[in-house]
Image 1 (cartoon, rainbow, N blue to C red):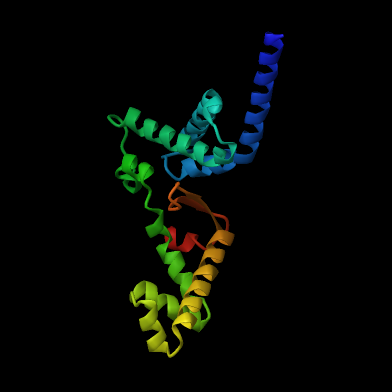
Image 2 (image 1 turned 120 degrees about the vertical axis):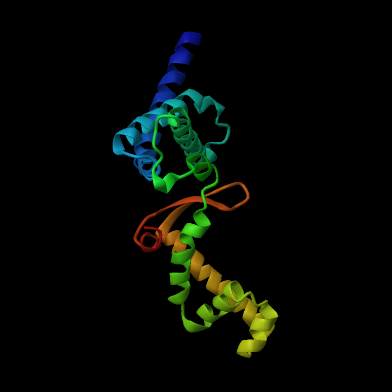
Length: 198
């Protein structure tokens, strides 16, 4: 009876891994390709990621965290790749310090250009509100006085402008957040972020 149950568990885990592979392998491959020197290396690392996923699946307590857990494994695989070859591998100029790059990717600065373009495309009242508060660092009261509206009107305008930018970004890109809600990685689903980051 125990052997039969173990075989059923192994079969379920194998099927689960196949579903994960189908759903995520293309995105993980793209994520790796952006950080290593060639596609053959990316394929090798992709295989290693899914080997580790298989080996550690039982450690995942919350299935809702599956995607971020797999990206965490992917980062570790990439870091291990550079650590193991550091002595004989010439690091590409774009990855001058790969260990730091992958542990704390500065995605906020990468997105800054795209966000500014989105702000510039907002209707004038919203564009003005965000530029004054985010770039000129005016507080909401100063914004209200400068544009001649009430404080509650200024707050409302800023909130609506931020929501428009957030909606544009979420429609354009996929974001990965840490447990504090900070963006730790993203990849574009269309072209809005490409022009600024390439």
